[in-house]
Amino acid sequence: MPDRPLQLRAQAMRAAPTPAERAAWRILKAPPFDIWHFRRQVPFGTRYIADFASHRARLIIEIDGNTHDLEAPEEIARTKWLEAQGYRVLRFTNAEVGEWRVVERTLVAALGPG
Image (cartoon, rainbow, N blue to C red):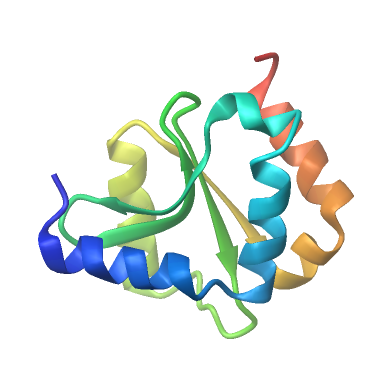
């Protein structure tokens, strides 16, 4: 179970999404993705918050800003930990979210039929 400080941080992040997160959320909560029951700013364990997660699909979606270093040791450890919990992690850049069709094709392929 997430600890209280992490839950409060996730709650604050839900209240102030980035423009890319806001755009992705509008789409993830509408058909055809609504059946997967995505949640936003989801705490995992005692250290991590996923931008979006579907427990049903065991899928995490991360929206990475322009300065995000995916090769940083802490990012690699984070992804490995989430995968060890049984989740697939898909990452998209802010620019990719702006071109939603690319993201949509990737999600449809990852999710398969509902």
